[in-house]
Image 1 (tube, helix red, strand yellow):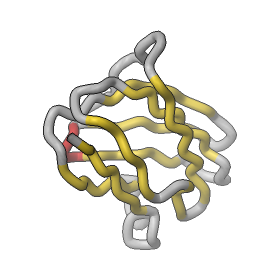
Image 2 (cartoon, helix red, strand yellow; image 1 turned 90 degrees about the vertical axis):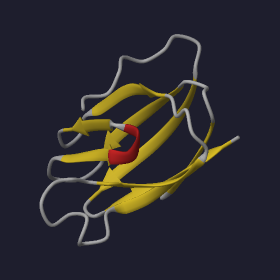
Image 3 (cartoon, one colour; image 1 turned 45 degrees about the horizontal axis):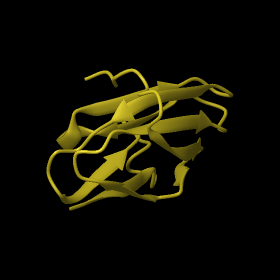
Length: 100
């Protein structure tokens, strides 16, 4: 589903989406603590950051910077990727580690 609005005062994690990668490709967050994800699309085409297991999706047009909050209730390692057809297969993937 769509991402939640940013949470005032929460820590932030900046992620750059390019054609066809994320930087950084690994994110770390604490269980139950809200964090604001900032997605900056440095590519020439539309990209998103999708984490199906956490019901999170944040999208950005080329040159756009978008921000949304994420809170994970369960520790673990979850895959994220760009859901645009072909982008995941081209290597636009990463992981988010939720620590206890």
